[in-house]
Length: 178
Image (cartoon, rainbow, N blue to C red; front, side, top):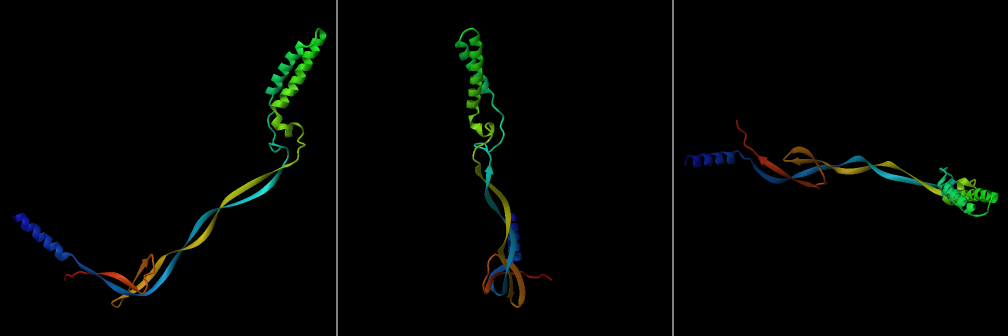
């Protein structure tokens, strides 16, 4: 029973200390827009055509592949050795090795002819695209600095939107202890 009485007294005391609040309308005197500058990134790209010497690889120097020459030389030497007899057999082997090496090298490096045959191809054009990030400055509305009057007193606040001619306000009434 004592607990129930204590809880009732405590609850009543808290209710008495709680302020009464209600809403009313205040008159708006001014609402000034507030702006901020922001940097917005964007890509700016340009492209232009460049002349390249040579064919497929644009005149770049590549390492020469010797695998085709070696295999071609061996194959040509074996075939040449099968032809002829006596001293003619040695000549046929040597000639077969040379022809096989040249043929094997050309087959292996056929895509790099621009470099190996002196680069006498028509110049090729290639598009080069370059992009960079640039920042544009933009002004954005952030809200409104609002000056308002309530019961003869002036107040100000910041709001996200323009409130118009009237602004709803919460009024709180608290007793003043002396």
